[in-house]
Image (cartoon, rainbow, N blue to C red; front, side, top):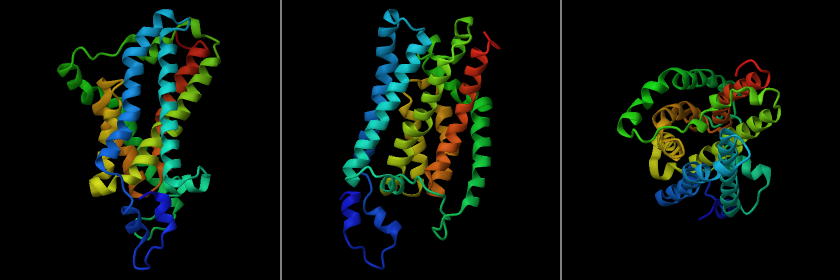
Length: 274
């Protein structure tokens, strides 16, 4: 049964909207199939396509890698739109907004929108920042012990772009902005929190947000050395989105990470580093 079918059928007065939505959940195989559709292409781009292209690319290795990752996230956006269209039969903004929880946070008790719930973003962003800049090195350390061959190539590190070659290269800022849009909204967030999260309750129940965090971490096969910290950071990204049924909360928490590459790019362009 699709979301479109559900909306067309009459729902008994005794059935709440939440109960109706639970009738239209993904199966485990559907969830894993969607995960594979986006995780495997990203891994292929990172581990196979990038090393094959770099020797022939006129661009710096780091830029080549970055553009391919943006292409992979663009593919995620396409996958998300196709899924939504198959479910809803339309790509009207109002239909997409409701389906993907791009709405004002809802009070868990009343289901009513409440702007004050956005205050929950503060502890979520602080926790995400703590994990990213302090705890990540400890959380990810076991990956280096268990899989010593899985070390990041130099071109995957943004610090490699801190060279005089990019002083005054304002086009670099454009790449950062496009990357951030697909990373924190149209790509990863739109698919994992917009498409998947509202449809995972049927399989995982109240722990659907935990399952989403694990799935999101494992999606990063293109940089597996960071999977543990990404899963933990995912808790801060996903919990408020699930609790208050608002993907905007995940977009904001995840998007806060995008300030770092933006500042770094500006520092490189202005010649403050490198």
